[in-house]
Length: 114
Image 1 (tube, rainbow, N blue to C red):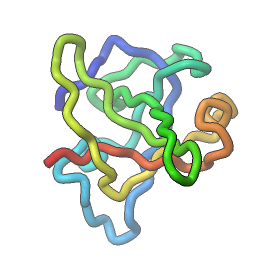
Image 2: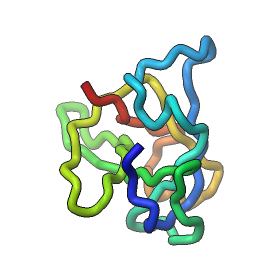
Image 3: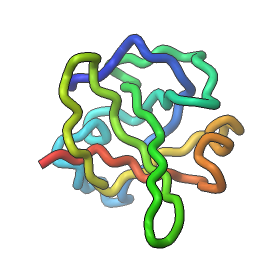
Image 4: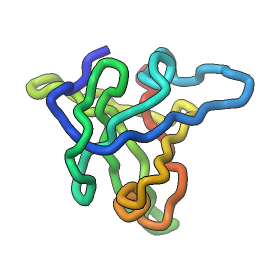
């Protein structure tokens, strides 16, 4: 698992299918249960680690307006792959998470790579 472990942010839990099926194609959600969310509006409190890899929130403008999802942070100098939705979501009860994610509760985690 290649991830930036120098980043700091807030902790979020990974929520997956109740059957435990992994659709991430061995993405980070298949390996851990928590992530460290980094980015604007998220105080750099907790360091990312192998047990809590760094992800960042991404806003995309689409036909239905702006959508938010999270993607793994790659180490500096490494090419970032194209991540897709693998069926898991992240959420934190920390109010900074909700502010950073807009009106969203749980945010889709795009950690699938083919």
